[in-house]
Length: 70
Image (cartoon, rainbow, N blue to C red; front, side):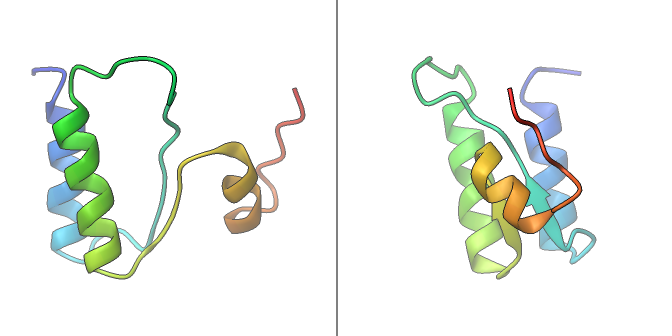
């Protein structure tokens, strides 16, 4: 399984309405070799109108039990 496979699987699950929300943390300061797949993941989440979080602050809004205070 390639490093791109997890993002592609998530994209397929979102496209088939199998995911209602997505918490996907990214590091904006480091280069992502799979940047195209991450952007596709974000696009499909917006297109399918699912809740998604890309950082801890929005993750806590979507999942109050998910409190990381480090």
